Image (cartoon, chains in turn green, purple, red, cyan):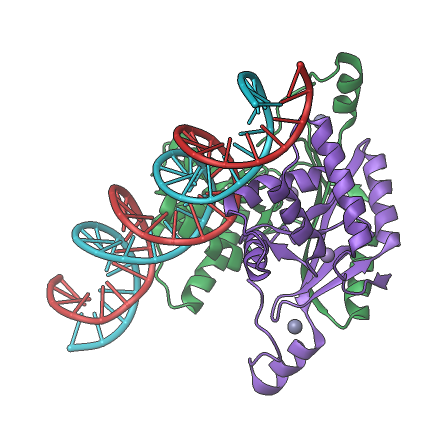
Length: 174
Length: 174
DNA sequence: TGACATAATGAAAACGACTTTCAACTTCAG
DNA sequence: CTGAAGTTGAAAGTCGTTTTCATTATGTCA
Ligand SMILES: [Mn+2]
Ligand SMILES: [Mn+2]
Ligand SMILES: [Zn+2]
Ligand SMILES: [Zn+2]
């Protein structure tokens, strides 16, 4: 059982490898290259942590790069998923989808504090193995899984006990 | 690792216990009793399997009982969740929420065939234990989790191989 | 180096699940 | 019984996401 360090954004060399992979998918699907798409891909790949579509759009504007239209971002993200650059994550949040880079990162799942929104990323091989066993037992070929744990982190537990409800830090992100 | 049998709807005695629990919550929250709410609760508790809000509304109409307005169902379901009668399930389906009875049923997670929609309900204590260990390791007090496995069931795998794409049974339920 | 076919884009409208508003209707304590 | 307060259906509103459509960008083939 290992906690993963916060993922830094991809560096320029990694970015090049990722964009190359994107271009392969674009070629394979008979699409055309587009600078806007690559700008969105760069923003997604260099984002540190989990992001919503809105985070990305705002980030683009903030970076003073050409800002892409939300509709375009909505169109591009599925392509980035197909290319294996990003993946949907924290799927059980009822408010909008969230994504994170998966390109050149290892698989992990999430432990979330429902009070303050803290997210711990972990990699637990024993559980992964049991999941595979289970799928095999039932004759399924496993293609993916969603595994999110919810609870109260230690700081939240303590401030709950002490002050009867005040939070210790940032508010839950939605 | 155990596969759960398909849950039959609750029988009349169980229904009475469940409604009693609902009435306790209603009382505790200073609400009033309502026949419509109990009709919706009955429909939810006797539904066999996983249901969407729409399934429930249609079921009510079909049973020739008083049909409740969708808005009312949307209002009542959270109360049933609070009372521990039902819970949200199959949360990663991007289309509307799904629920299932949890009152007098044991906890379980889901293995879903993404081709045909088949859902296998399983109970895997070893994984449950590891989840608790993990949360404790990181100082979290665990309150819940979402665990859904995705894959291809044996029939789908075989029809894929044989006919190059035809499904063996019903289509994926969204 | 065009010129054409076709993909990509922004803007706005449409969508769908869900929530809120509001007037009419129940429920229930006094 | 009566009134205060919760509940309901109907309709409007919200919000994330998708679709439509006119315009612009890309790439292939003269
Ligand atoms: Mn993550
Ligand atoms: Mn189930
Ligand atoms: Zn916390
Ligand atoms: Zn199947």
